[in-house]
Image (cartoon, rainbow, N blue to C red):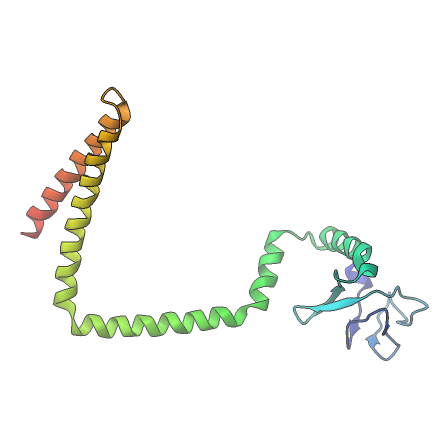
Length: 173
């Protein structure tokens, strides 16, 4: 398929097929007139390729043939689809990187001003989060019958979390 491609000024349609001035011929395709090419509705894809337009009933079978030819010729798979998506949405990545940089800078300034508060807030949050997880496991274990092994495992995990919370508290003090 790649040997039968040509560079064109615009994507052809049935209503407006290519003329000899619209394409640059190569050694395989020596003429771009409607007498030597098949006309179908097409649209631009990633500003580099003309692909059959699926919204046109005349191009539906052409699209299937095109897709099969591309997959056979280029070994197309999900990676090529992802690469095309990245190419189309490159500006989204730049905007996200800029926003992330800005948020990171603001956070660094915030940490510089409020470091002591953030350290103690993080220490207490970690302690209460561990304790809360332990309490959740311990009290939710009672929803199971006493003979169920899940109840025992949940209580054992709760005891392990309580022990971890105690060690954490001793380290902080």
